[in-house]
Image 1 (tube, rainbow, N blue to C red):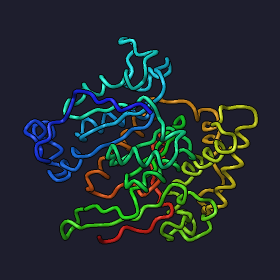
Image 2 (image 1 turned 90 degrees about the vertical axis):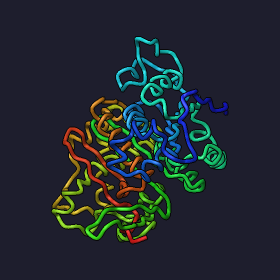
Image 3 (image 1 turned 90 degrees about the horizontal axis):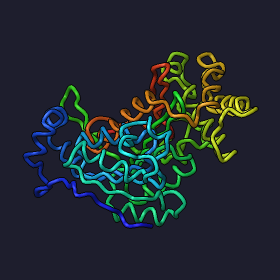
Image 4 (image 1 turned 180 degrees about the horizontal axis):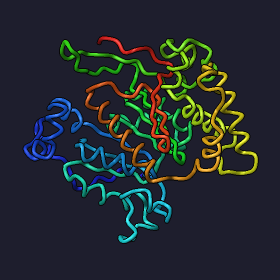
Length: 365
């Protein structure tokens, strides 16, 4: 694995306190979130895996908010199709053919010179390496949050497992045409604060790893089973089920299963729509979704996923990347409740709903 390369754009840290330049730049959000939350963010390290699609909007929001250090990792070169996905790659600057990390670094640095930047010209060991190597790298680089973008379910499960061992918070996210998701695993004991009528209250959440949260073998268990899987839709009323819009989450789960079976996402080939529909209907039944609220999975959504799962639509990337970055900042600042724990988004329908998979309710810390 090649050694990390760090840019000259370093944040000036003064005994762990906010500097005058930072106080001026982040004045508005310090007033909004508070100095303590801002200090947590500026002392944090975030690792972004893959610079395609969602990385653009996610990175922009994280860097402008004032995280301390950003590590970007990618092993590919900029292609023509990358040019329309965001600001990281500029055709007029000859980005095509360059390493994605090299093309992206100056664009990121121009957003906020107070953020320290590091690049890795590989996705190893996160993709293709061992869990032990991944844990070692996360600890060595003191990564607070690792964000895996547009990777497969199996890859995400391996990275999540390593992140838990290293004590690193984990997010995965992906865009599939007009649809997408954000999954969060912030560890077995994540503490945060919320403002209540009686003042500031401390809360605690116990997150489930991805492999457990969406385990089909556990979907028959009650949804209140902490870290034991369980369907978040079983036993819900018709109206409550509709509010959670389970169809989108089921479509994404079906995509993941299809990808595991075929080792590739569907591309609209013969019979793929029918295959994806069959998987989705089976998952709907296994999850015990209220049949009055969702008697079947929408054909239009399945057809779109089967045809456009590998396509990137800029409006979807902007919406999903913004939601992802916002939640990463929330997790770092420990201010307000983060995603619990799978957010499914339909940008054409204008819906985004989160459901708790394999987790208990928040409790006082």
